[in-house]
Length: 372
Ligand SMILES: Nc1ncnc2c1ncn2[C@@H]1O[C@H](COP(=O)(O)OP(=O)(O)OP(=O)(O)O)[C@@H](O)[C@H]1O
Ligand SMILES: CC(=O)N[C@H]1[C@@H]2OC[C@@H](O2)[C@@H](O)[C@@H]1O[C@H](C)C(=O)O
Image 1 (cartoon, helix red, strand yellow):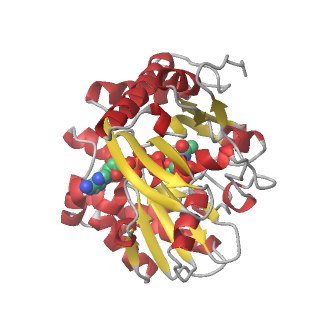
Image 2 (cartoon, protein in one colour):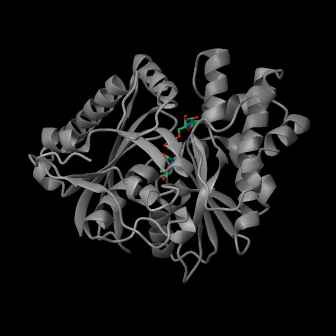
């Protein structure tokens, strides 16, 4: 068993989640304390600028425009989260065997073998004195995989430990949605389903200056425009067979521009649910249960739409004693341990990589940098 601290800064760009787990990187996971640190408005706008500037990137080590400043911010803020976490729980760096550091995705174009996660793993390891596994998507993409989703192997460990009768669909609703289909005796089938909260957040930011629909209030007050929803669902992504994955900004909210804020948000929330439910067409059997995690698990409008679309029970991760909001941070802790043990992170059925593959770069404190 190892003590691992996972750090995630997701596509919603709302902040950093940190979660401690004890795990063997296989069937055993014990969940420990967690902490989250929100980005302030100035930091968010730097990250938004970094996403815009990343569009021009051709090679993953380039850092045009705001990307240098954004990477510095990401690394420093992650170091702060860990220091605060250690202090709050009276821990020392020696108590942590490994950090799993996801970084901030600013660009994801697997078809060009390009996926970019900002964050200097070596600098983080040096400043904290804790070995750090980072850049966990790169090896998969270099081998022809999508580089996402990576969490399915963690979803599988939880579903198996809970002895749930499958098949189970675990749905993460962050900025982007991704599903893991977990059934006995097979590797997880997984892919990105469509938008989750990113379109809702962007629309809310534009119209109200607050980047979320708190507790789904706008969506619950609005009416879904079925014509507009049909236009949104006509996107070619939904007709593509997996493996497939998405950039945060793959979808446009243009189609809802003419609607009132409640109707626009309701329609986008329904879009999230309908596109997630449409994942079933690529699964070998109908899931008996959907378990929702990520910030979308706190949006009752999305959960209601998902119940209507799937017709089977939809529960949140918290109802199983897991953590909807910390699932990904825990997953990156788990993946770091798997990386140290040379166990696979990705599978042909999750990213389309040719064969099950480990990944991640190990930064040991004080180690000399090897240029890529
Ligand atoms: N109480 C809430 N009500 C409605 N929506 C919420 C609530 N809490 C969080 N969210 C939504 O969840 C989002 C954050 O989700 P999460 O932290 O899972 O995303 P992420 O990890 O950044 O993204 P990804 O999984 O795509 O990398 C917020 O941007 C917001 O839209
Ligand atoms: C490139 C990238 O960062 N993708 C994220 C994003 O956010 C959700 C979805 O798209 C998922 O595929 C992935 O994150 C989770 C943590 C994953 O890799 O499993």
